[in-house]
Amino acid sequence: MENKKLPEMNKKNVLRTIYAIVAALVLGVGMCMCLVWEQIIWGTLVGLLGIIMLIALIPMIKGIK
Image (cartoon, rainbow, N blue to C red; front, top):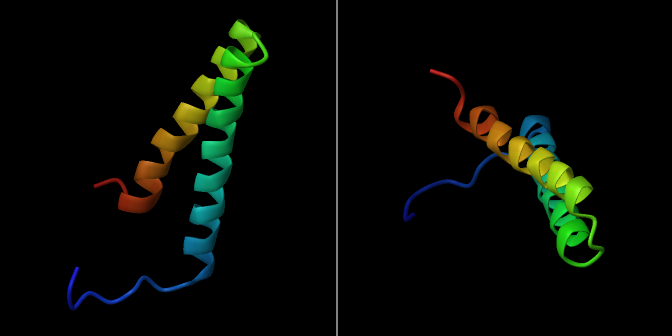
């Protein structure tokens, strides 16, 4: 990490960061629905949506080559 410059704070990076935070919160809500609120079916569906959102973040950052 030495001699590496910081990433630029442009609109694209800010939107990616906000998307990642929302995706992590969706996954967390799904886990809470399963474990705390005992709504297994809906919690599983919301959790899967969060996982899919986080997986979709990889091509957003790395790009498709």
